[in-house]
Image (cartoon, rainbow, N blue to C red):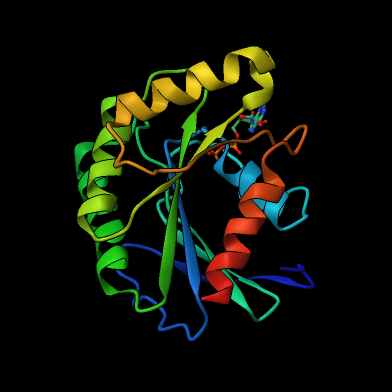
Amino acid sequence: MIVRSVNLETVCGVTSVLPKNEKPEIAFAGKSNVGKSSLINALMNRKSYARTSAQPGKTQTINFYNISEEIYFVDLPGYGYAKVSLEAKAKWGKLIEKYLRSSDQLKAVFLLIDIRHEPSENDRHMYDWILNQGYDPIIIATKADKLKRSQLQKHVKMIKTGLNVVPGTVVIPFSSLSKQGKDEIMAIIDQILAG
Ligand code: GDP
């Protein structure tokens, strides 16, 4: 996929009607601060187009980025931000659930996990939840530059075990600084586009 244009086309809050897009969608989920905006910006070849977490967890919206009129990147709101009220968390859950259930075009869900840490309970819930909605999450292990290369595989294994992933699940170490892993992710997106 060549990124010719990027357009933040739709922003949906809890009460919004979700768009009925006609192009394939790929969604990105993960804990606040995991590096989701940085990943999306890297894939779009933009420095700071997707929101970055000046106020982590505050933006409870689903953002649809139209990439070259070819595909949508769907930025799901980050979870696990402690200061968000229970009521806000419940609304957040409903919003994501509504999206995962109702999208006709969602082809794949990327779940981002910080490569340094064991997946949290929230990460495990999110993984199981995506699985229960009928999608096999592709795992992106973010901030790979924070580890020595020799440590990467050990941490990939830790993430697989921590999430209790289904056999064959792909875990891709990624760094938005070095762009390690970007080609692999783009190859997966190309496969998805090829149907
Ligand atoms: P989001 O809340 O998931 O959208 O996370 P952001 O993309 O805004 O990133 C959160 C913080 O982690 C920021 O300070 C980023 O600069 C930093 N960050 C994101 N990706 C990486 C990475 O690959 N390597 C390193 N070292 N820092 C990163």
